[in-house]
Image: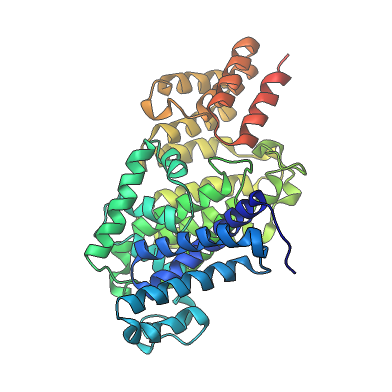
Length: 423
C-alpha cells in the first residue's frame, strides 16, 4: 500500500530505515564496490533520491529494499561509466541473492560469511589507527553521527569527522580488501573489533542523544556479531567475556524503560522482566571465559565487567546485590584499564557497600578530571550521595546540573524529576 506523505513523514521514515538498514546497505555496497567510502556515498545518494521521490510516489512497503535497489543501480551506472561493467557484473549477484564466489565461500564457514562482519574487519584493519578503526565502524556499522561518536569519545566533533574522512581515504588508497581475515591472522585483529562491538552495543543500550533511551537494533547487531566471533575464536577468553557482558546487559532491556519509554534505574527495575534466557547465555559465556583464564590465558577487562554484570544478574532483589564483590571487581578493572569513569563506578559500588560518605570522598577526589568535565553521571552520582547524606539543597543542585549536561532527552527528564522529588 502506498500513500502520499509529507516531507516530515519522509524524513522520519528515511532516518528510521537508515538506522536499521543503513549498516547492511553499506556493507552490501562495500562488497560490490570494494570501497567503503564509495559504499557510504552510494547509500547517501539513495537517501537523497528517496527525499526527492517519496513525497510524490509515497513511501514504499519495503523502504529498505527500495534504498538498496536504488543504490545498486547507481553503483551499476558508475561501473558502466568507468567501463568496468563486464568485470563487475558477476559481483552484482551478491546483492540479489546469488551464491558467493567460491574463493570467498572457501575462506570461512557459511555462518561467518556475513557482510556486516566483513565491514567490521575492514574498518578495523590494522593499517588504520585504533581511534580511526573505532570511529569509522561506529559511523558505517552503527550509523551514528559524528557528534554522537564525539560524545562517546569525549573529544571535539571536528576531530572525529577528520578521523573518519582520513580513514576512508586510507582504506581506498591502500586497497584494503573487503573480507574477514584468515584464521591465522585473527588473534591480532580481535582487540579493535571487540572494542568496536562494545561501543556499538553501548550506543544502542544507552543512546547518547535523541528522544529514546535505547536503540535496540544496534544492540541486536552487536550481540549477533559477538556471538559469531565467539564461534570463530572459541579459545579467546575476552571474546567470551564480551559476549557474557552484552548478553547480561541486554537481558535488562525490557525493564530499563517504563510504558512511557522513560528510564528506570537499575535498583528500581522489575527483575521479573529480565530475560532469563539471555542471563543464562551470559553466565555460560562467563564460565567459558573463566575456564580459559584458569587454563593460563590472561584475564581482560571485558571478563571483569561481565563478572560485575553477573553479580547483578544473580541477585533476586536489589537488596541482595553483593556490592562488596562488585567494588573489588571495579578495583581489578581499574588496574587493567585505569580511567576516571571506572573510578566513578568503583566509588558508587563502595558507597553501596560501605556507606555514602566513603563514596562521596572518592567521587570528590576525581571530580576535577578533565574527562569528566561534561560527563552528566558525575553530578548525578554526587547528587544521589548527597541526598543519602541528608544534604538536600546540594543534592538538588547537582541533579539539576546533571540534567543540563545530559544529551539524551529521556535521561534529562529523569534527572529533573529526581531533583524535583527532593523535598
